[in-house]
Image (cartoon, rainbow, N blue to C red; front, side):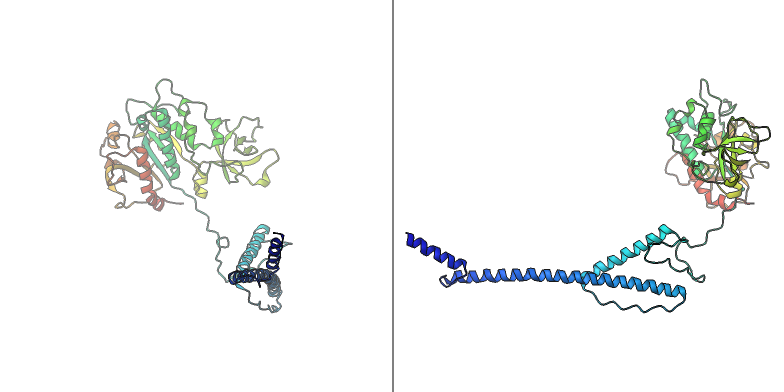
Length: 462
């Protein structure tokens, strides 16, 4: 047995050392295949390492060629600026397909870095660490293709005409809860602000209910819908930083804080710089003839030229910052119509209460009254078929739950009950309606949207 084991061990060592003389033909063939496979595998690994080294070398060549190309481009641009001849740029050699993708991304990255550096430094400064100087200024004969280089549009002219809306306060009686009543008033306020309405008149369409006093007088037992609607509309129109000083706590304003804000141009932020601001006169001792101090929602109070009672809302024209002092700014009290007439800026709406339908005309705040009156009804004419005339002050009437005709009939002071004779235009702003009734807040949006273009085209501008 020892001899057999020795012979087996010797044969094993021969096969391990590659001696295949004593193997069978099948084992010999399998051994040859294994050896050839190991040889090809080792050769392939060496080849892949060699190709990787060559690719790294080609990438380094491309990087050095790109850097040389960028330097030549800098010298070329500097030569054009100084007036000298541009130097010759050597032609780069072709690169392999494996490095083209890297070269493309590298050029995009360089362009992004150059653009970012130019934007961070500005037009008047040259970056010290930037590889490229700022590009030369474009010639005056070329047309710029960027928006920032285009000439600024001319300033918007002032708007002298006004737009008024008259609607009954009884629409709030249709709301089932105080929350829905406040939400309805918020919808009306949003529509007025979106379409630049300058005045809203809340008239009483019920002869038995008398509307007296101002909007700041509270309602004791039974709430008056006209006053509730007017109070909420005026609250939403007031800038947020003035509401605490102008509006005391009242049950009608309990849910006004949940309504959507108007965000009008005169609802400014504390850091916003503007030529006009809304403010309230504060109670502060001032020498006689030195004006008053106004809180305009900024870091310091504004001293105006007029002496006004504390708690009065005022529109202030802000003086240049050079005229301000360490303790306060300086300004001039102006009319609330000044931003609209001078700059064309919408400056909110005024709220007015009328005891009846006819009081809308007789108590008009404008000197010559409304020179254009428009009534709305489903029995009126189409807007597309109407030719409008020029005007300075237009008023648009909307009806209540039963329309505009019952409101006119209920007014005893009117001798003529035909609405077509009372208005200059009697229009149907929503023909072929799919619902039997249109709510007043919905009719307000539809009407103002339909009349927006005719009003803008026919409104007289000074």
